[in-house]
Length: 433
Image (cartoon, rainbow, N blue to C red; front, side):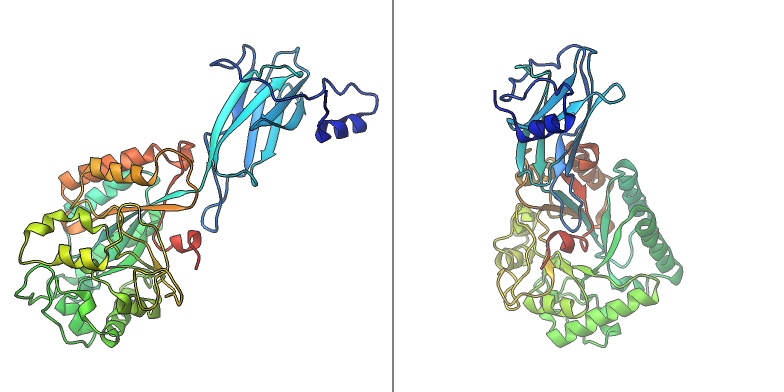
């Protein structure tokens, strides 16, 4: 019977001591349950392949309580002998590196004293992470206290959740928002940042109060909601502004954030998702690292019936290849859809799950499953979903809560899957340039 190198070494070191039985071929799996008298603890169903954002789960740690008659226990991984343990303090303990193990499902067999049938079998998945990026778009300068409460309730119901709040700078320029109300909103969002780990990013609809504050002439056309234009500027395409004008807008946003007790934002989404290459270039100049304007436009079919609006058609044309499984990439300097050199130094994280205004709970769950079938992931993957605070009704809360409840069933923190909630800006570490 062939001896494996680890056993030969143990025999040589032991001198005349009884090394126990030699190690042969991998044993057969046991029946449906562990053999009587054996208790195996430790081990998980999922182990992550690490990256610069998420440490890897690279150690398989198991402890076995066995009958007094057991002298040695051998561990086999995917049919290959890995390690032998002797009784220490009444138990047998294994620690085995998984760092070189490939992605996929793996089998562990434990056998005592050279038995041909294992007393226990464990299976696990080794997978890259599935990052869930939940965000909100501050379309309006203010949103009601009931909307704030629902967002707090999301955190209470989903303790692992982190949210990227794409805050609108017009909160600080709209005269209808009182100084006291502005301070309340700042205190609210910074409290979530400091206590829940949320991120504060930037969202820009070109409301005239903000555009004029930046020293730019406010446009009223083209509007994605009405062909006659929009005197408030709210629904005007952000890409209608020139690169020099955008530089002023983003510089002003940074100034307003800092003046009002917020840190400089590094993530962004354009109002109506209306970003083009020159918008992304201006973002990069302003210090942003992530854009999430690319959208799963097919899910906003409600806008198709509005013949006076071009929101659906514009996004269908400009974000044509983006769908529910689209993944982060670095856009080309001259083409926001192309992943080729020369790249912009900004990560595009597609809004592949869109926003709760347009998708139901079951639809969000179905899109999640399009990104995660239950099998190990061969690369880091992102699923992005969100909402508008201004329209975050109880019905919309129920939709999102239903989806998050399903996602929570696959959290790596509970060993049930590869899911990790992530802030938008942190994703640059998992998807380096």
